[in-house]
Image (cartoon, one colour):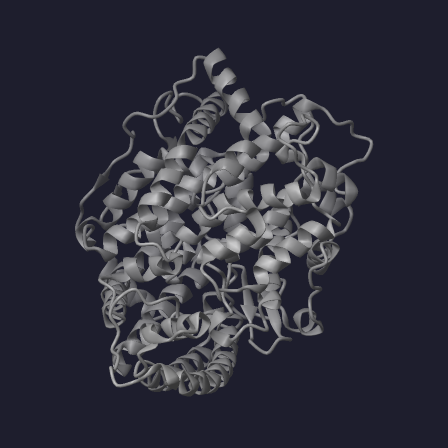
Length: 639
């Protein structure tokens, strides 16, 4: 995940869609004056971001009252200075500028973000988000087998239980207890919603939905994304039906219904967003050895640093940039053992000096961390490629682009060909169709299974910001979306005293999730284009299917990717996409092409076993109940 802090929400952002204050007495000749102002704003913005990111980094890597206080002080001062610059920028009638680049820069500067709030409300918003993140990051639950052991953190202990346990009662316990810890933020979240919508209105947006979506530069983007999901949904339904069938075989009919939603706690992930942990007992060809990358990493003595060095080598092989010396010196690649509490959620950081880039990640030696390392390093690569752009253009072409870069590399890294190349799969293991199908299925458990969850995350928040969902039905509306779109149900009844959306970091951290949906779709478009450029994919050659492509060491493909990345946000995202793919629209064609062999297999297998495709009503319910959260929150804050 890209650090929210690398592009603080209160900084000047994206394009202006609405009416902005302007004066009519300026003439086109004064573009020279505007250019001079931009030079000043560029220098100021760079310096302020350096100070802000450092304060945020210090807090996120050492959660304490002292670091929080310092971070809030820095944020408040920078917000004040940003507003002063904004007042200068909006005096210009930039729409009349003839220079399109100058016009675009001013359009971006014309959105102030959270700094538009009065100072007291700005501080309140920052404090709410920081407090919600602190609760999330420091929460601990009690062990199922030993109720007196109450020191289980999300990472690594809870994640390991969700990944490895096959006891449905233990999984249910962990699932419920994690949500019990985080539901205390519901009242805080209500205030967060109010202030976020106020930020949007002060920036001339109707609500925070418009504000979040404006980075995609398309007023109909929601409709277009809905169409993309409609194209992918048939593949997801087949995957869902097959996995439910295998889970029913494994856990029994009393735990998994034949035609119902899948219980969320059984999919090996706290949020049921990745199903990779159920791979071993759901494999299409169980007699064919599954690719166990984690086993090889442990066997070969990999460390956190070695995992990141391996990721770096992939980017360098494409003629992209190596990590800087400061990256290796300053990054936090493992969870500290000195007693510090940190935000373990992985993130990439740009300190805006062209040298200092960092990753914060509580790395474990497993396949998940290997992929996360590539993902986060993708953000760093993007930072380095657009470092020479003006400050205001040092951003992704749209929010999904930033998330896609590293994942494009992961698609090559995940291929059997590449795993053999880097020694994480035996070269002696012969290639065969069953092995490839197993690997394709494994990737689908991460990529395809993820899409409805990533869609629901923001569908729910859009309805909240638009006031279609109120605090009285926050949780039940959440489960309505989870059920109808993802086909998932909670393991126990839920109610409005619960606040299950807060069990996910991005909810409490003020991070839109649509970027991950967009990223998952466009990374296959990028992969297809890069593979064509590399000569590794040919739709007319059965020996060169898309899912077997590995662009490792192909500088031609890397140069094409680098050209797109260097643009930053200096042009609309369609222009950037066209540079690499020749296309100007987000579509599911790359993803569907990649998974086509799996789709055919799933349809045949489900038909053969007479498996029901889709789902009926859930077994569990969401009901309203009197609130206990206020007392829980007071108890937490008074510790």
